[in-house]
Length: 224
Ligand SMILES: Nc1ncnc2c1ncn2[C@@H]1O[C@H](COP(=O)(O)OP(=O)(O)O)[C@@H](O)[C@H]1O
Ligand SMILES: [Mg+2]
Image (tube, rainbow, N blue to C red; front, side, top):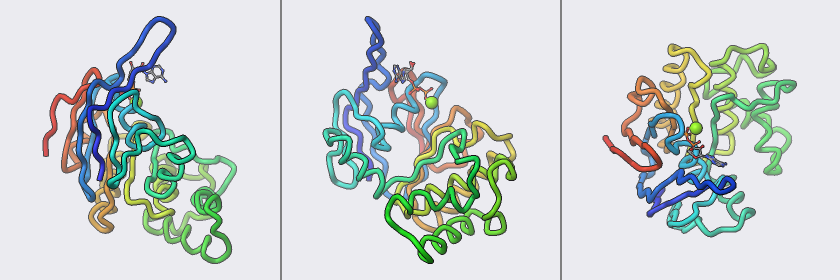
């Protein structure tokens, strides 16, 4: 479970300070499918980075699976991240010279998995996003939607309980974007995966079960 308690994040740029998150409290239960929506600059990515343990809040507490992770050291945060969380980004962030399979294998290799186990788990992850027949393709040989599916397989291959996606459809046309949302819904329904995605697009957010709207670093509404 995710619980943000009075989270504030302040960025200092010279003399100027930006309050990217301003006293945000939010609870997300295991197995929820949630969209965080808001205009550009509203604090969505900052919130995602805090939830994903990529960044620490300036103040407040962040409880993840019953543990306050807001004061952990960077290496401890990395461990929490690697064990629990899969990430998907707008620009896919794939290695362009490597095959789909190689890209998906990477997080497992870092975790010391090798041999047949490495191969089988990676092919299974690609199969679960509908790309079993594309394992040898490189990103340039795939469509945008297929590249995002490879990125989703890479996020899932370590079997995280939480999938975080920051503008996952931002680089896709609206039809392909909706396909990606259907895939998230399927993963959420079949595996009980908690899915939290950030978007500025209501047509994407409406595919989820709960919409949290933020503006100027504050939660404006929270509708299930
Ligand atoms: N690393 C940073 N350093 C300074 N200011 C930042 C940084 N990241 C974000 N900001 C500022 O914080 C605010 C929220 O940014 P962000 O969370 O990226 O918004 P969104 O994802 O909703 O577009 C913006 O005003 C942005 O300029
Ligand atoms: Mg953003």
